[in-house]
Length: 320
Image 1 (cartoon, rainbow, N blue to C red):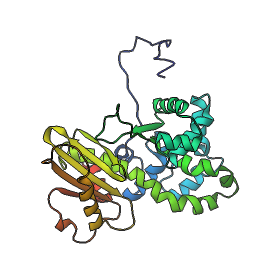
Image 2: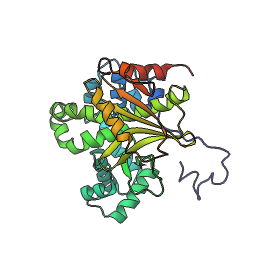
Image 3: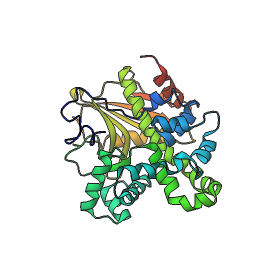
Image 4: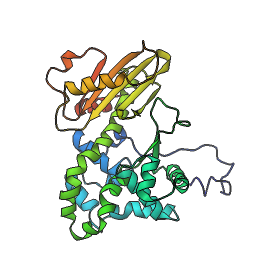
């Protein structure tokens, strides 16, 4: 639409009076469709993302495991070939782009890592990455404390959850899926799925941070994003330059409750985030799939906020 209709040679070039940039649903918006409890809704969103068609292909009367088997791992299912069909429709040389997406989906996120995995030189790779960004198939991240234009510490991630799932679990195992889909599911997808969901959980928690900011449950922040430097990483960092205040948050999609070790770790890493004056105010938040160790809430001061999946559910359901 943008290139063929609104572009320089398009029939509406210079004639439009407005535009609507239609984005996938956020998790909060998709909850009206995903008829699972909050934990399974997060897992389901890690497969479909917010694309309406993908959301409606899931049968919410059946388990997510069953849906993955029937809607994605079956060669006759629409989603089995959807990402490849999408790329062949949009791109002239889909094989190169598919190799890049598979590299990013399997954890090779820096330009050097992508180049090393795909064998594509840095010059051509830059152009391929720009095209994938223009198509909104990948996103480029830099640490929230850095300049997006100047920082060389960029990482890439697959922007669509279905594509990320497909390139991580389906594309590398196509021949095996066609012969023995149950073996692929039980041996490859099931044991690695929690790690896949953990990334989606971070994005949902970031969405929750913005919602908490809007509802004044957290302080106001102008920027929210990931932070990393060297070996240190923090899942969510919020910056309030006008108030010299910083938010530091971690998100854990684990089967064990969050304990004191994560509290200590986050405090230590906070000291290594070089932003603002030494007298800055610090606010902390923890998001945990499995709740929190007994008594931990009583031992933290008012600068700490704790969120379980049920707390996220309440946050997202509260009327504006």
